[in-house]
Image 1 (cartoon, helix red, strand yellow):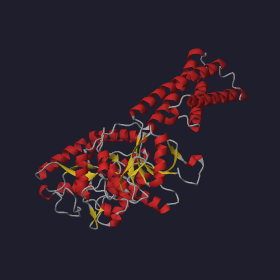
Image 2 (image 1 turned 180 degrees about the horizontal axis):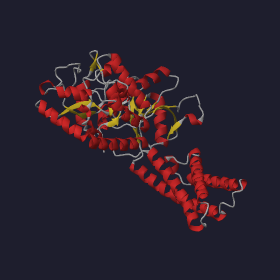
Image 3 (image 1 turned 60 degrees about the vertical axis):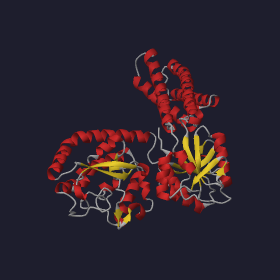
Image 4 (image 1 turned 180 degrees about the vertical axis):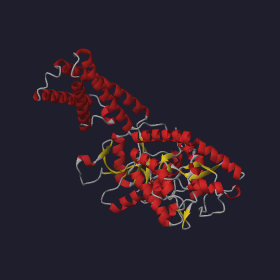
Length: 507
């Protein structure tokens, strides 16, 4: 459960922006109250669909091959296995084309069974025709094929009934709802909200409205939904409470306003959709995705989500545990060297911006003299910096000082690979990083990492100029847009190589 104390949230927000207010320049009291409500854990619909697809195909395949093993005389096992794999693959493709694997479909009875059994019948009919066309009847048993079709039909009905019960149960508990905010106001937003409430209320939890307009065109409440602040306030709201989906309710003709909204929102780690419910310009059905029955255009997706989050979590834990085991002698030797050279703690803890700009405590080996520590990194470390110890100079040059962050990875605060978390007061050319680079916070759409795409390309160490921090941010954004497990693996392999070949900026 995710929970924010509303009093504490309001106090922190007021300290930054002044007292509440209703002018829309800051989060309203209503927004802070919503942020303070407990949030129950929800389930990813994409993960549910993926598991259902895999389980259904696996059960059909095991059933088909099991019937062969039990009732058909031994022989031609390879051919039976090939047919089973082909039938399961074709069935899965058919289910995908007819949208038989969707949460909304799982809730239906007649419509769902019609699609599922129709696809199963068509695939088996094509399989039977192909066997006779290619004169492969001597290789396959007709009794086996008929038995698999009938038992497979029963299996599909039983599986879908069980799946429907699970989905309905999770729906009743609110586990499938996506926490959603609307950007925009007025009549367009009112129609959108009413359509969502009529057809998607079981999948969407509407939290409120954000709109830059404060006049008669955009009242304080639209269709029972409160205005929570300006669009710029949404960035802070999303840091205080989970937001899964942002729907922009504006006509496509308002091109400049739409672009302005997207420019502000693209730094958020959420799915962003542009509603097409009021548009007179119609595209083909495949151009839209749907929130309930509301057509929307996909403008941005959460960079790493659903199954990819699971894969990256496993990758992080495996790499971190392996690295801790292999590098423990180096870490122990470093700790001893730090204690022998200077008084003070072995570790240095520093607050940095993490995922979605939330603060995390980053662990490092102490590389500076205790009386000269700079917790906020207000002054960048330069060549021959008198604050850095002799041991510190070596471990910074080789990045050994970063190794304790493996514990941050195990705690789930960092990834092994991702944009490096910067110190909060770090500056380039006397400007804070987020002031120097437009869209800087977009690099926080994913969890920060110990190493990254920028680091293996030489953009590590001192960032004293605007160009250096822009290069680092551009590399980070490239990584986010092109992420894959193979890319993570490549970066991990190339990191020690880059430490040797491209460490001239590390002091």
